[in-house]
Image 1 (cartoon, helix red, strand yellow):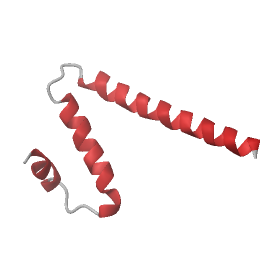
Image 2 (cartoon, rainbow, N blue to C red):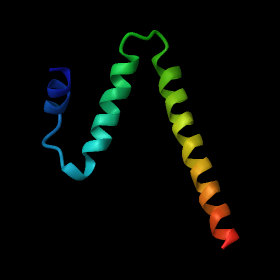
Image 3 (spheres, rainbow, N blue to C red):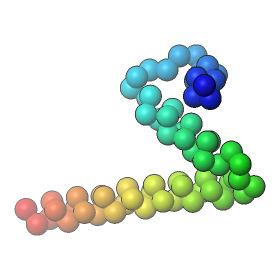
Length: 66
């Protein structure tokens, strides 16, 4: 029910971007009862960025080896 209400605020959702909407909804659900919402959002963003950086480093290392 909460997801449906969240999705109603948009003027339609392209399936291409559906995962982005769902990720945003999950972040909002995760921080809804928190008192320091900005700190949690920043921690999630930095964690995601760190994972992406590690992936790029591994990919780069694999390309160099070949």
